[in-house]
Length: 104
Image: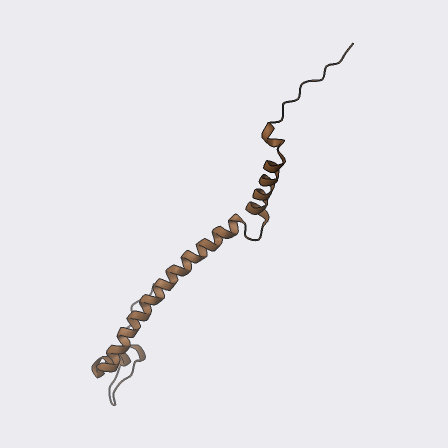
């Protein structure tokens, strides 16, 4: 009595090619295990976008502050107003009442 072994499924021919196997191994290595893997590159690109937004914000702030600085240099009334509002400065014999909104 002969025993017949069940037929094993045929291995696709592209899996027998050593160049394709090597290429797949390198691709998987680069995708997951390398220092500059896909996930690290994605995080880097997100950081770059965030830093570019911060850069744009600070450039606008610098422009706004330089306009304010120029105004304070040229206009003594604006300088006095700024000093009174920001640093609560006052003249001799003058009383200041600071009213803060109710914080709930």
